[in-house]
Image (tube, rainbow, N blue to C red; front, top):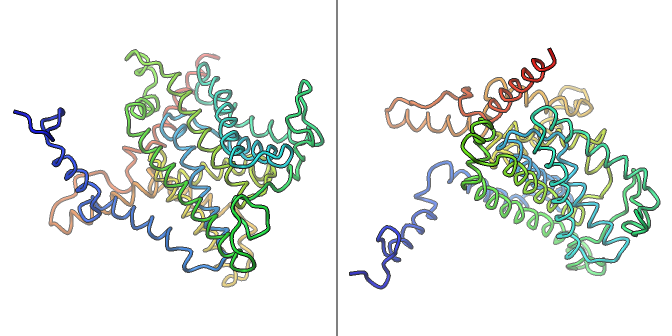
Length: 415
């Protein structure tokens, strides 16, 4: 006979299920890689204790780059649809909420969700070609859109009122951007959404509020994206990357899932971009899209490759390495008597090439394999997994091979 707490599923009781959940959440009982992840999160939380307020901009930017990298990883790392213009979605979210705030007086509390939705619509517009285009052709579309957007910023510098609708009556600001929008956090009397203390204490609290708000957003995005990519939808994403024809043969609509991945990726990037401009970033084409309107998008690709594509967690690792590269360059400059910083992003590109050669699966996978090898050695066992430099489960390797096959098909069709 069933007891009161007996579960319908598997016959386990409610108490047993609660005990199982508690055991899974117990850090001591977690696998080593999860424990290292929690330690990394703890370091993020404690980092401000070692910095002055004027040093908090770099770590906060790092967190936003990690968010943008994770959003890129959903569509490119999982489905294999390489996006070379991901900053397009960041700009849509950032500019939308900035214009709403500055030119229409709409609070960021409303503007940020609207910016996120506009970025999602941008994801639909860019993702629709995914229903017809494959590989290199789709990548070309993603490469062009941020450049077109940047030209629109210049073209509608003074006014943007299509069909008489005053979307941006004072214009998009050209290369200078629409201006500085209301900040989410600021010192007393600054007009920020949340006004903190006055004077130096207010500056300290503002820097900390921006940092921890970004960190909380990163954790939420991480949990959501891990939940999606570990679900049945995530399995279809991975199957599309590995063999799109097999997905169609199985009766699944691969185009629908690719469009879903594009929209999800754009929503996250748009949300991050909208909050970015209301915390530490001024909305300008150079600030959001980067040099030549594509540098920011390239940086996000490099960050994901460094950490490990197709992992979601990898871009966080890649963003840390990205930031460490800048710190190391700053330390080396005085020693060699040469301004190495002028060569940026060459050192970062060199680091990415080294990862591609020696750890094509990314630093995260290489670290996990190294840890397993050490643990196996400590137990006196022989490690039976793949080597650290192996690319057997490299999502990037699968993407490259997929593009090679599609390029061969294009060449064969033109012969």
